[in-house]
Image 1 (cartoon, protein in one colour):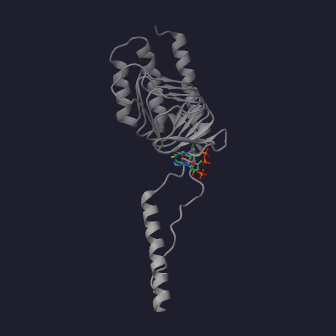
Image 2 (cartoon, rainbow, N blue to C red):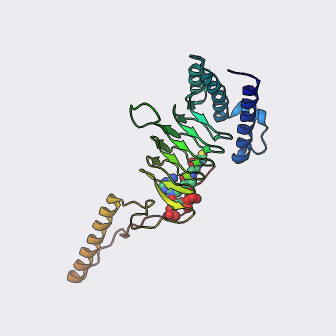
Length: 245
Ligand SMILES: CC(C)(COP(=O)(O)OP(=O)(O)OC[C@H]1O[C@@H](n2cnc3c(N)ncnc32)[C@H](O)[C@@H]1OP(=O)(O)O)[C@@H](O)C(=O)NCCC(=O)NCCS
């Protein structure tokens, strides 16, 4: 049954969604809420979802699905009317976001373009992720299956997450693995998931080493040191990665 209380609740949810955009998009701090509503695809899709979800819960046929599909065409964000979305979600840039039927998103979550909260097969029932409060999901990240992402965790851009994520963790890579838990690197011999082996670079590095050795041997035998390009050891590049924006 849709009554005044439902309208009041949806109104409050939309106000919180707009506040979330203002607080979490550095580019939106001086932008009015009306302008955000008119120009932010992620916010528009969320507003439509707030309505389609209410209609879905009330048992209204067809309209919720049509509304969700319309928003997909207009904004590129597809949120199934049945998906449960908490307060103050911010979908930055919007395009390419897919949130499946049985997904649950906690309060004050931030997600960027290209995020998928999807299923892994054709099974029915709960098959999409449950995302805790204040989680940040980087652009292009795929969260697949009925996994649970703990509160305040960060999912790196382009990660593919198929296992539960503990609270306060940073997960990166494919398959996604924690590289930080409570701000510290996880212990254990196989915990360095940010620096996976690169067999091609290793093979080229090995060849370069052998070539250098051969050249040194040749120089010893002939007294002639070959010129040409300097052969440098391949090193993995380290340094800060992007976050937010
Ligand atoms: C994961 C992320 C949130 C950083 O979180 P953090 O807790 O500050 O972690 P750090 O930056 O210390 O990174 C931890 C490690 O993971 C690595 N890493 C970070 N992001 C990564 C990613 N997306 N993929 C693979 N490795 C990544 C870092 O190189 C670092 O490795 P180190 O152990 O050698 O230092 C951030 O890198 C990210 O991906 N943010 C998404 C931002 C986004 O989508 N912006 C879109 C704007 S349009």
